[in-house]
Image (cartoon, rainbow, N blue to C red; front, side, top):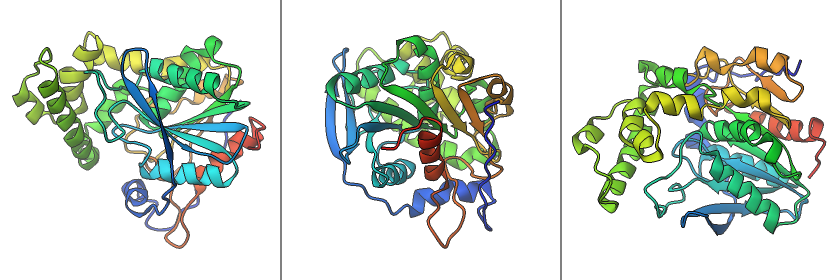
Length: 325
């Protein structure tokens, strides 16, 4: 039942998925003035939260994607748009993503929902918000949906729902898609920063001794997961990680109204990332699959800065969650 039909009307050349994906990265003009709060975690680490406030009773929690931060273009534009609509916003910087290395060998991964749970409980216990809404992009969207399903019956009453954008909900098939030639330029950039982080961790922690030659040769995400994610976080293998970290198995457990927006032309996503049947059989999980948008792009025109995705986020918050800042 909750299939939402809404199309992004694009002009040339934004019907090209790659142009739509990279345009926002280079041409976002938003520059919100965040206020940073650092919170100490239960395991002697820290997470940096960047706030934009409007004296609202409602807070939208934004979670970035792989190797992103509060300064990622989609985070900047969404935070600014929501704040201008009267909502308080907090942008989560996942561990190691706030321009300062975290304290531990472990950083973050696609399924590390214990950090999301910790952040939500911190916000619930230390602030007076009546409504908290989660909104995640790509990896952050996977965290959002997995958290809403995995922790469904333990989530604070202040949490009203969530939105997830451009999400590889099935990591096993998506990593195959990301390994294809069409995604080489994105993969190369992601691996460049991940390789740098692994090298820094190896230099910092004497008990972590990866094969440095293999790190330099790593050319796929599976290589990275085999060298870092699986051994450091205790997964048996990259395949074990993909299976356990994917949000798709948790979608039918979600009891808070939630929306997934995945463009059909997203080159990062496999066919398994469009869960039509789950949405059709759910009262709470909504799905929107516009023909165009690329990966966290959703730009429509050169003439005016596109706010299509930001508008859909606000529409869901207001029309489905009935929250008006």
